Length: 306
Image (cartoon, rainbow, N blue to C red; front, side, top):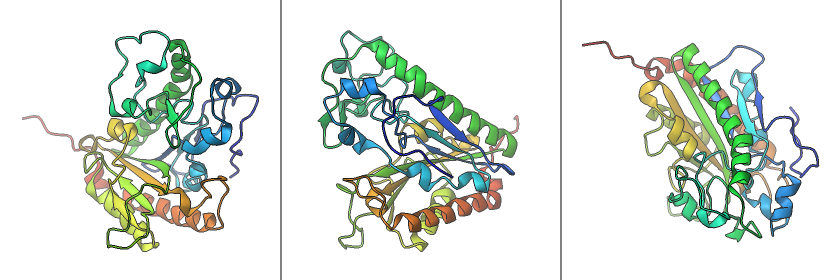
């Protein structure tokens, strides 16, 4: 499977998202890559005080490619084609910083979340090492255009994929796929100095059955990776919004240290990329097998009427 290069282009993609469907039998597992988009609209770049290379520091570069084998196993992969610096689909639809806009925002906008305070709302204020993205204030109409054009189609597709799996199998497993910068991560909890390789987030046990995160952690640890849970990433909007294990929807976030597979300055793949991709392929296969083995405990447990 070929993936487009992470470059700005003149012509926009025909769709803001790409939904890669299995060619064979479907499974209950859905993979999503919300932050690997690499199409930077020209007008967005022109409104920024930053160069394209700096804007790309928040991109989950190549994550869609790392998980790109999932359709071969019967699991669809949904990916955004626009970057999170343009609009972040792993946020509430209207999670906006009022200081970024020309005029007061509508009352329904969430202006007080911790993500907004950090400059990382649906329309981010900063990128990388707290670099301010915009030269001037935005209009709410511009935010609405991005939310309607990218955020809403992404979640329409994601809801559709999750609902289809749950309807067909009685449950759905959503794997939300991300990368994380190597700087600032907790170190090896055994007292060493090696940074953590992978963080698994289940919102501290709220977004999926415990056996799902156990299975993912065991598979990755067996491949030699340093894995921790929920520190410092317990799961974002997607895992919180979709994860509902009591109703048969299990959401798990995976964060992969970028230094494992790419140069974080040049964004070029390392030679180790191929090994990691093969390990991710094994993880995909293990999660598919797990879904078949544990279906009874993952299904929606309908309560009988008293």
